[in-house]
Image (cartoon, rainbow, N blue to C red; front, side, top):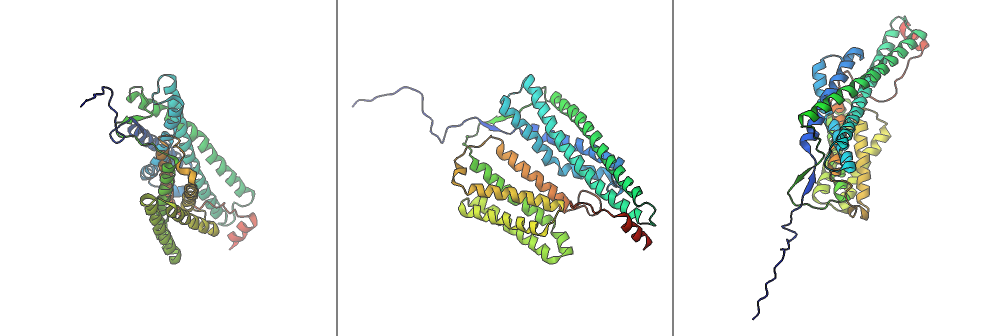
Length: 369
C-alpha cells in the first residue's frame, strides 16, 4: 500500500473563509451628523427669533433641541453620502488633497441640508406673517391696497435676506466645526472601516429590499402620527389611517421574513393605495407630503423587485443600503414631527397650499363688518 502525501497550501472551505468586509465608519458619521445638526439648528432657531413669526418664537431652547433632534437623521445622511462619494473617488484612505476634498464634500452636503432647513422654516414664517398682515388689514381697514401689498413685499424681502445671510453663517460655521472635528480625529477622515466577519456578496436585491421595508415602516409611522388629529376632525378618516398603518406593517413582515413575488405585490398594494387616496384628497400638509414621498419610493422599489433582473445586479456600493435606510428615516422623522405638531406655531402640521391673499375691496368690506 502506497501512501502519498501532498504538501501545499491548505484550501479553506467557503464556510470557514473570512474576508475583510467594508463597513460604514459609524463613529465618524454619527458624531459629525449630530454635531452639525445641532449647530445648524441653533442658527435656524436664532434667525427665527430675529425675523420669524411671533407664533413660532416661544421657547427657543426647546424648539432648537426638538427640531435639531428630529433632523439628526437628515444631517447624518448628508455626511454618509459625502463620505460614500469620497470613497468612490479616492478609496478608503483620505490623505493630503483627498482629505481636503472629503472635508469639502461633507461641508457642502450638510450646508445644503442646513440651508434647506432654514428656507423651509422661513417659508412657514412668511405664510404665518402674511396671515397676520391680512388680519391686521381688516381691523378698521387702516392698511389696505398698496399699504398691505407693501407690507407683504417687505415681509418677503426680510425672509429672503434671512435665508441669504443665514446661508453664509451656516457655511462658515460648518467649515469651522468640520475643521475642529478633523483636528480632534488627528487629521484623519475615515470613510470606511473593515471587519473580520465573513463577507457576503451583496446585490441590488438587498438594497431594494431595505428600501421597500424602511419605506413601508416610515409610511406606517407617519400615518400613525396623524391619527389623533384625524380622529378629532373626522373619526372615519382616523380609522382609515389606522388600517393603512396595519396593512403596511403586515407588508413589512412579508418583505422581511417571506421575500418573494407575493411579498412584492403586497408592498405594491400597500404603497399604491394610500398614495392614490392622498392624490384624490389633494392634501398638502407636510406630514402627507412626507408620507407620499415614502409611498412613491416604496412603490418604485417594489415594482423593481418584481423584475427578475433586480436580484442579479451587484450593489452599487457597500454603503448603499445604509444610505437608503437613512434617507427613508430622514423623511419619516420630518413627517412624524409635522404629524405630531412638533415644529412650533399654531397649525404646525404646516399646510403647503398656496397662501390665499385678500384683495383691497375684500379687506375694506371685512373691516366695515
